[in-house]
Length: 230
Image (cartoon, rainbow, N blue to C red; front, side, top):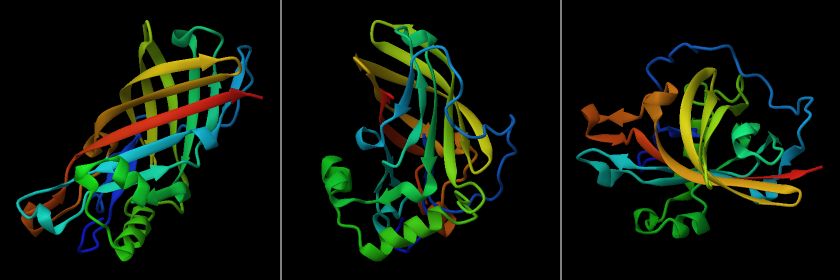
């Protein structure tokens, strides 16, 4: 993630760079699989060809010029949505496979503007991805996916907020996520963006040289989740 090849992490929903000093224990039971449950309302499956999770990670500290900002994305998304015409009564579960993350796609960096204009060397990209999936961060060998499930949905007139439970490397957190919805026959799409603190996900942002070079705790999360009937 950094020019000195530090570890990076994101997840949700999120993540950051570097190994946490210790993981907080999960306050709730594991979420388990986001496989499709039995349901009465119209079932939808996540369409990975039209969905994307994108996370923007920023360098910080007095020596931030030694690091890089990063665009980390995942389009290999899965899961289901239960929706029968009323968004506030909908529910969903998403899976974000650790193996699906892509670091610093050139086109995505251009889309994100001046903060990501600097070119990132290929060895920094591959090193960041390797470290993200290590036991110290996403622990992909033991927890091959991040899971997100809805707890409640509130709002009206196109502006909604989902309270979600997010499980990253065995740690579960709850977040409030603003989103908008577009619907058409057989399809529903939710999109939005928010800032998330890595520490709120049980992660410790990377820091070296007594904090002179570190990864910002706040990360920016953008998403588009499209689901279609089957």
